[in-house]
Length: 353
Ligand code: NAD
Ligand code: TYD
Image (spheres, rainbow, N blue to C red):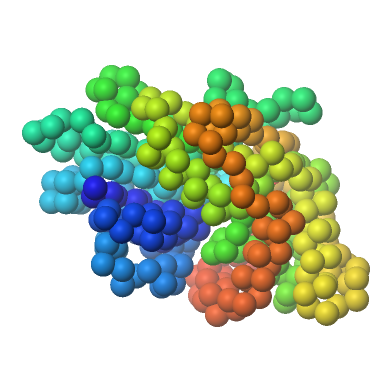
């Protein structure tokens, strides 16, 4: 099996690459990543010399490069994670989301379709797996509602609109060309290597450095959090055993209001840093709400649990402790990703609020 994983230097992709490289030594794993601000090869330093692992630096928006790579390497499978992934960035720069998330995905679909169709065995034994988000379903307002695989798409941000468009293209290639596709839509992830522009690592970093903790609006928005390694385990299950043409929702049945989550993080950090309880919570600062801020996401994960036997391995409090410990023990990683261009970007975003 020659497997292409895109976006493997990012947060979730790095956990997927590590799982596949170590669990399937008989597979050849190719990690294609442009190394944007969000991609960091330090996320994979422990496996970079594995004999079944190859890194390729490249951009999925470059159709010729993608076509040539498929022609040369003749992959049997694709797990596609490369994307622009931050909602706030999609509000200031939507076009880069259209390019990478939509055009980049269609480039990969074309290359897989054309290369596989021209091969001796056609689509037999091939698989194109598209990794997506629950944000394509929009925002829940009724507390009894969950996103199922049948929920109609209703994306509300440029990020979720670009992911919804990419999902539609993947299904359209499955329907029109019979490309063997499978998809999953996952809730918010957290864990080691999470880029500190997203809520949980941003709060950990700011608590540690005594900076304000910017809570958007009233902090009432709800997210359903899943430990990133559990998402990687789910991706393994869907890639190997998911039924072709199907979609699997992935989530932890673990909903938290942002403000409650930030308070929990403050309590954990006070204990870890030896500060009197209540110290970090004083940093909480309510700031202007995100434009078009989705109120609540919550995944119904029964299909993947019943059909593929997957379930989350960690309770949230355990996962959060592990995550905080990882950030405290990996100061160099954090210093690296919060320096240079990223820092300038972050400061400009922050002062605009
Ligand atoms: P990330 O931003 O941490 O990583 C994205 C990776 O893609 C980076 O390594 C980046 O360098 C690479 N990349 C970006 N543009 C590229 C391009 N044009 N060509 C090649 N590589 C490019 O994102 P993440 O949080 O790890 O998310 C990975 C995937 O999972 C995305 O498709 C995202 O939509 C989806 N997802 C994320 C979450 C979450 O909570 N983070 C939840 C559900 C689904
Ligand atoms: P985020 O981690 O950006 O993920 P997403 O928007 O994709 O769900 O944000 C999670 C929640 O936290 C979301 O409701 C926005 C909120 N948030 C803040 O209140 N402050 C922040 O600084 C950030 C980055 C997010």
